[in-house]
Length: 497
Image (cartoon, rainbow, N blue to C red; front, side, top):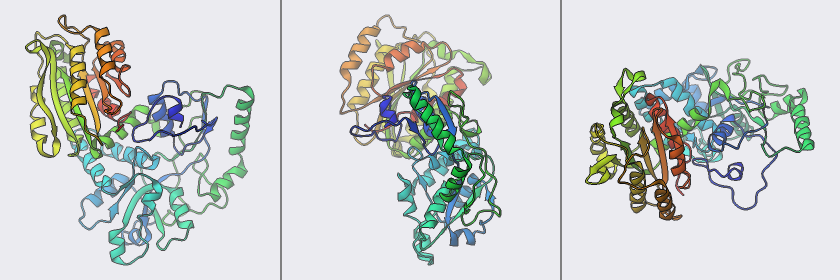
């Protein structure tokens, strides 16, 4: 609803239908929602953001399983707990709520990503973890909760969901319904972002009386009596403490664990989320999930003009081409077998007068992963080549539309380090006109333009991108950050339309 009001679509999140009134004050369960909106909509700048409650992330487990594993009363790292599951053939099923739709799932993936670190080995571990979690994912939290066992016999415990990252409040609320098998909350060690319930005065609120009323409501929500009301609902105050009547869930360490301070900063610009996370890191997590778990069809187009041979100081003076090839290999390893990938290289005069050359058509990774990977070492710069950007963009878009498949995220992802330089090619006004004419509302193709280095003409790329619905421009000023920028792009407005 709020996203629609700002003319954007969040990845994995549907649009509100009908005439739904946008509120003046919004309290989502996590600041990550605000960050995702601010990353998509430049006009979304709330006038005030202040946390009014908190609920830490825990791993919910049926009590018999938590007791058998001797996890009750302990705090453990999420990545370590998940790693134990991955290495055991008879481990209980470990589920998650779709991170693109639910903050508890998103925060859990952020925790896993921070734990595994960076590098090729870390990417492999992250892909393993996400693939494993996706086997028992649910789109909604209530759907996931329904998968927990309804009896304690071994067969039921083995067939039902055995663990899932959820909020402390979720466990308290679930047990309050007196289910046949209650849940234990396994608390997490290390730095973990809690659900922080940011009180958000939306940008459209400019009327003085409304602003005063919003401030009065916020004052009430920060009172001692409201802290007790939060406690009765299984929630903590923003600082992680709790009011009278708070009943810690089964499995909580004695005296209930100390919890990280809440995310909301309360400043005029909205501040940043807990533990220093920002919009880019949130989009990167969503992108990693999309690449690893969703079905997609992408044509990857790489600049091989002469300037791609220039050195990158932050990469030990390796060329931009070598750095890009490494990023392409990492990106390919993230894509699941549900994806199909094609590869083009472009410069000028790559195939007669054509500025691009197909290295492999769009190919299912389930059968052609090695063949696709074999194209990456071929992305070497053409020493005398210029940048035939405009013709390549149009031809790639039309090729993706011609191969469009329903039920998949269809996209073109183009990497370039320069600006159009092709005397024999299209002019910008002709490109824009042809792109407008080429779009088919029944065959949505997203165009993602990723600039490499600081010589890219960002304005040129934005002019092209604005022509194609749902597209975007992302700049990796430091070429060693291409993988991060790529994942942010995948995690922004990727989806089937």
